[in-house]
Image 1 (spheres, rainbow, N blue to C red):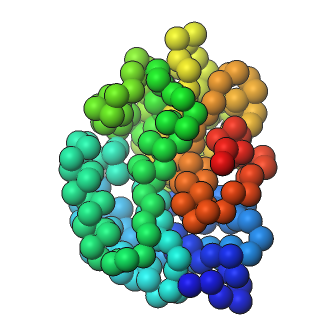
Image 2: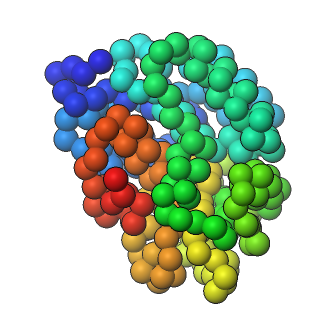
Length: 236
């Protein structure tokens, strides 16, 4: 429900409490007249992330939002597209008629609007996570010939990764037959690096937090370009 601080829209951003980069990244992309309201759930049980999100999501309704966003790449948890659909339906059932955008909805929408067909996947932790992501997007019809995890051992260390390390990871997957690069795992905060990466790689880079906020705004009918965050952020 639009209010004094969000006359255009109020967005409830439901994010992992461990991911300290997500709030400032979303705020950096926020257009005038949009209010970002942050709510959190825990990733303390990595094998129970979907259950934790469904259990706690009703708390995100406290600000009477126009849209609820789930900022978590749940495809990193080894779920199939049908299992994702079930998870998403569980979230929607808990919030009722309020529109919902998940990070996975957003990256799929971003890949499609950018015309991606053959992608390289990067995630911040082990190769197991990036393999799960690879399998998920293959089941959605994308070719994923290359993937890699950045091998960050502890979740709390992901936010410390800077541009140089991220750049090295992307360059390692820079093959001529890749048309788009996809980063999942929102704890890796590279929103402000996308333009530099795209300039060097010469192809689109879809980063999950940028994709999620872009998709949220477009779902609300807000078409402002998000300057400074790469090609996707300029798309209507």
